[in-house]
Image (cartoon, rainbow, N blue to C red):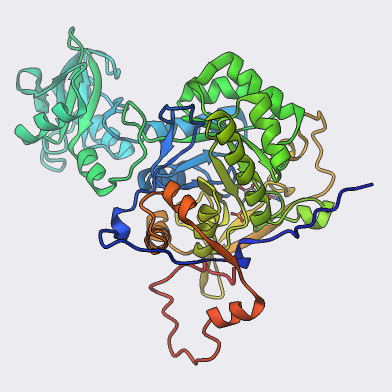
Length: 511
Ligand code: MZP
């Protein structure tokens, strides 16, 4: 006979935190939000950490290049969706890695014999105001000089002049030698009052460029998530069908972490996939597995496959109808608590710490705060990011309000049959597990995260925590009755002007 669990399936909105002692030296801005994304071996540092406990969902309406760049600049990580051809996903990963930060490969170059008119056109197309002049016009050619938009007057100079007549020649170019640190390169820019520093090999070939603008940008984004080469970090979703081809391609493009995108990861297919990646890449690659909703699912992935982090959630996503369609899933709070309890026991037994990601169903800032208190190391969100300027969809005006389309990966529109047919060869979606919807546009990634993270930091101080691991340790949660939910609201007073401009935490819906 079937086993019936005694506990009922619970959601985040059924819990509240109890305040604990706040010390005099605690302030929200001093709280550390960094969190591991890779498994942590005993007495070792994690191989990958993120600076804020937030990642974006592996979804077409969410994780494109622009959003991935914005989120990495805030300290989080995106997982570029895999419901697209491998080469398209690779292109997005490349765009994020090439975006900026430190040493960049020069993508617009010219030669001494090019005309001024042609170089102006190149500047217009590329948006760059500084163009290296190399022997053959390639990004690795011998550097002959630099030409910038300050070196000519477009409407005064003869546009048929050669670049050579206008450029700053090599004898006057300040450059750094290959191997120079970013700090030293920035010092050279500062000392010589330059905007761009070419980095040259011993034989004077162009290797990279360092820009003053990037240094200034970095100061604006102190939490930026960068790899060892100072490039922005980005993750890539993979599936159990084509990982043998997809993984090498996204790793080669520079993906910093991989994550299986599956509605149900408690499968032999996924375990085999993780094992294949470990056999081929060892620990050089960070891999997330899931989704699971039970201790049993956690054990299966962790003990059999060597997964780095485990993603929890089934049926809670804002666009998800899996529970209605198939009668399977679990309340997100119950699922998370079950998996976290098992993770703690596993840590006590082995000394190995497995980060947990709570995926989907977060309807407002409070629920993020509760999920992290319950033991999630980070949260994955779709709707939250679909509502930002940077999500990869176009805005639409409906009755004077701006919206963005948001659709589940289980819809006919997304055609992500791989997410729902683990390992199986059928390319058909027999029925939909997601809906196609609109969500209100609420602002930029940095605007929404600023409020959310400030609230998180503030609650952490209320429970006396300096870091997310302290927070999990210190948190005491209580269940709420329906009456206390009414008490928590403002139902007994009449509000003249809801302060909606200051607070976007309901993310545009009732949550
Ligand atoms: P949410 O943040 O919008 O509530 O949920 C996002 C999560 O829902 C994703 O990370 C994924 O796990 C899940 N998802 C994506 N598509 C579907 C679907 O079509 C879905 N059912 O459930």
